[in-house]
Length: 101
Image (cartoon, rainbow, N blue to C red; front, side, top):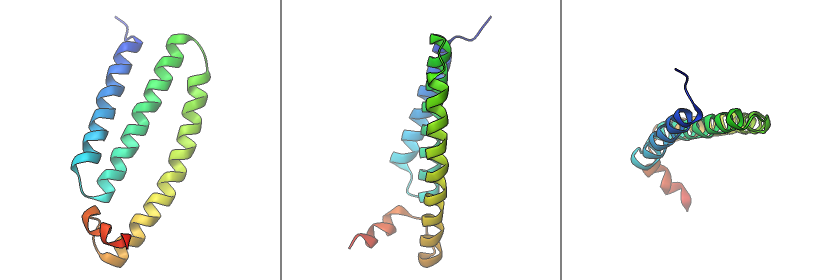
């Protein structure tokens, strides 16, 4: 019994849904940040599964670029979250809305 691309696509859809649910329901910046990373990984899984099913390498190349952008995003995002947490002693997004103006 082999696992086909449809199973990987279904797993990616579930992971993306969990990430989207985390973005919509949580107020903690770190949890929202982890949800975004989960959604990016779900998209990466979709790229790899589609690439494998079609027999090309384009999906793996796209995943490489997504991972590079995600690494840069993690660096900048965590730096901002840590700086705000040190200044305000909270990671709640509701309280960060006061910074708008």
